[in-house]
Length: 204
Length: 247
Image (cartoon, rainbow over all chains, first blue to last red):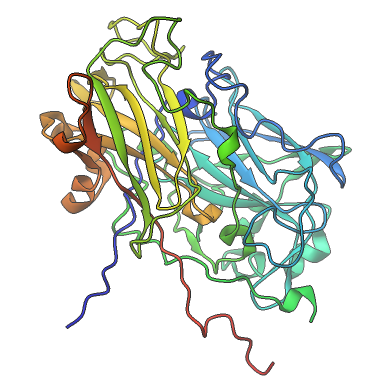
């Protein structure tokens, strides 16, 4: 018999409490090694689209905020295009990185992203997905990064047809994926790791 | 053809969740309140997961992959056993993955991290920051220089110690390949006593995180070498996968 000669993915290990040293060293006081922490700025003055501010906090199963989590987001630009070589539908806004990385505040656990509202992106079958931002959460006590999505509360029609939201069997959990609007262009998206209002996490 | 009819190419092999750690691993106590209790929702990969950020080689500074020097005062260097860590980032098909941003961080040779929340009695090394990064070459290769980190105690069970380890963060070609892991050192007896290592369910999986001493790559009279390969999820690519029926 032949062999498929496959390798196994490296097992994940927790990012641990000192993830800041490697990923956001300036944030944790290690200055002078890198000019700035990666993922700090997603937009500049030329970026197209509606500026938004997304903030939130990650909570554990007891309702305690995580003060050592690191959050990364990945999203399309205002026209729904990703700044990636795998994007074959067009060229994304060169003034938008699509990717952001923030550590939770040491005191409160809150993180804030300054970005633009993403455009809609198609599902593989051609239906449009509602505008969304992909989140990836790591921290001490999380053995493998948790992936979820944030949708927008002001996109009720698109959300109601979204191919991912509509496939969730327990529809009472859908609100865990929809941010709250807290002001003009301001959204709050808390992530609950465990318990009654546990955020839906995806196996992608 | 409308934009919506153009399917994304590829996608990644399904993640083998039986090979990866479970979320709830009570021997690692912090996981108990931080583990989702409901099943992950399986979903097809879309452009949002198949795409991912790209980092250019030009963002890497000259000392970014040299932890012995990148935080040291001029003319000084970090204290500890000098080592080279090198290897390749591969995918599950065995192909080298180019342009992967590899970030790494570690304790100093005494087992102490440079971090406000760290309380171990071992001293900081004024010439050691503990972070580095590089981007893989065309064949997926990477390399950096550092000092071997020390083991350290941590508050979990009564007397838990971490084996000497280096943390790694990897970006593949798509956000679904995003991975953080840790590298251990051949022959360290602490590996098999560690509740964080023990979250990896298979001993073969643990072995795959243990770097081998490579005397042939050692720099004589200077630094020993450890070889550590890492594997990201494989990329699907069959001719038939992206064909639209009826078009």
